[in-house]
Length: 342
Image: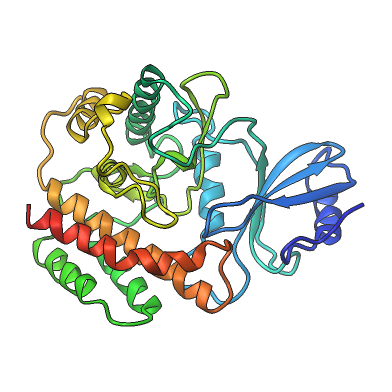
């Protein structure tokens, strides 16, 4: 028997999928995945197999946010590359079906980990898993975007300049009250944004542990998930974003970091060693403007958290934990200011 879960009309969806996905057969049930605060994601269990549905949240959305159609396109393009992604099956751009855009992809049977300290594993396993993350990130940044049909996936020009303008605009659109630390951070970033150095790659935009599906028994990523923020941009933004998590405290609400953790004892590389692994994969030796890259990513994460907080206040967030997002906006900005003043 089908049921409706959190505004997902399962009977209507089942009829639609039966007509648009070859071999799809009901009856079908849907279960919303916990975690993730941007695009609600559901596991579909049908007579014909298991699938995953990812949709835009209902209600009024910020411009360019929740781009599930871009997610579908980029995963489709990466299907035959060294970057592991789920097989995408169908994109529905008819918002009358369930109230917003959505797509369906294969269900990848694996494991998602939320704590970057990886308490379930040994030091040797952690070392291997962080090495795998750096390998896959380098593989992503080595993709020939023209060959996979993504040459037009982002705009030309200074990536950081454009991104700073975008996230500043989205932060202001979501602002609930003035935060002095954010204002100070935005002013610094605008003053020191680096000149365009010509590096362009496909970037994920949210490259972190809980966006990977891991093999159940091996230190192997079987699928990189959540491509909503992907674009053509500067590859070192992705690297700095992941290194940001190495610096964030472990006790922030809704966000697990590694700040203050004895990473050497755990087998987790230092920021310097992780950067070195990545550079070896990419064949590069020098990273200028590292403070800017880190501070920018703290700001961008603060802007994302502010957007989640505003949706929570409006009753339009996709996770019950979304209200916690408001608590980390100022600490994120303060952490970036500490980096600036190092």
